[in-house]
Length: 556
Image (cartoon, rainbow, N blue to C red; front, top):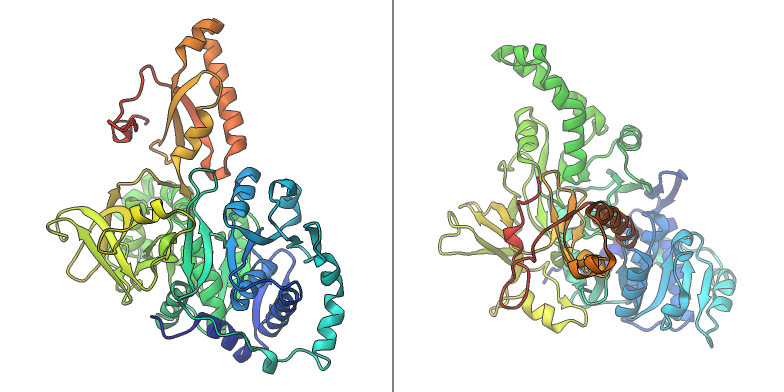
């Protein structure tokens, strides 16, 4: 068990860094000091106590990255509640399902998202609060929460007549074994997998960030990954905060133009990103230059090529603010060609490996110890084994156990049992090998789960379930093309087509319309770029599951 208690980590960082800047909303240029954060948490704690929120109660949270999002997260966890962060990309039906499935008592939601939800479909909620300004948007019949919320400023002033100070920061003792967070990897009914993350797993990730000096007192960070995703949450938010660092939340879509401007202004000491950002820089800015005739000639001369690579590296460093120790890449597979180039020019980057079920980190190596094409070295508090006869040469499933591993899936004993081996190792679903120094090399996946280019989990069965209910679709299969975009193969309902006398040209129009409707129903990162008609029924296993591996390389 991690010796550092998560709640004590939160308590001590607020006390010890009271005057330092903690969080900034980039768009509004609004900054909260650690003292401001402490006071906001105290107000939320007083609200929770006034409305008699029980220990272990679930608090759902959805909205853009920002100071209010983080305040609710820390307040819930330090009060003794369980936070349920929800990706704002989920469609309204999925959000409502997660709120219900998680048994959430309260919901904190951005105003624009609240407008898309229907409170009558979340009937167990005691109250809904605006993430914009904390006003009470809705309360269950018989509750007096709106009244309590309006009276909160006066009650708070009476409780702390001399103002709230660092000496007032005192949180309850909550063992690290307790549940801290339920993180949903999907939203659709029938596929819900709420990962139960204990305080210990979060504390383990934070402490590792301390020991490796990813963040230190006074460091700066730019958070542009979704905080409802385990990767961004663990490092840009939790580790940075507990270390006394200053995080600026981008709070908007991280387009290259916006990111470059923000990096130049913030000048972060550490950067956590997904491969997509690095690969875009390579493909848009570097590759065209390298392919020019004059550049190819120059790079053929040994003395000149070193100078060129050094110049390119300096330009890329400047693009990220020119103040970072290293770039940490994770959340999705990294293009080997791009990785090889960045290693060649001496760029300070490393590739880590994790999963939501480990909150998320499994392996990492500092940039100067990073072995190319690996995903880092297994963490000290974690163990890894390869399910093969020779883990150094023979590919097998990567299995892990240790401090960061989840408690299981919420209200899903069957999925929990399937996720672990009989002797208690978590099955990652990834295939790979390790070397003598415990560096992990991922070779592929044995799960159907796909990863979007920005690191989001994609479960094709969910998309297929929606598509299969659309006109003239008998069955479907969602796979990735060579560009890592989603394409749906559809075996049409030929009986219905014949009955309706649909021509081939008309069928194409129908499928295009199906694609438009499908993409409205799923998250943006689950959008399908094309629907292609497949002439035959898909081959299946005895359990009637489609043999996906037969079609994995069908689309170019």
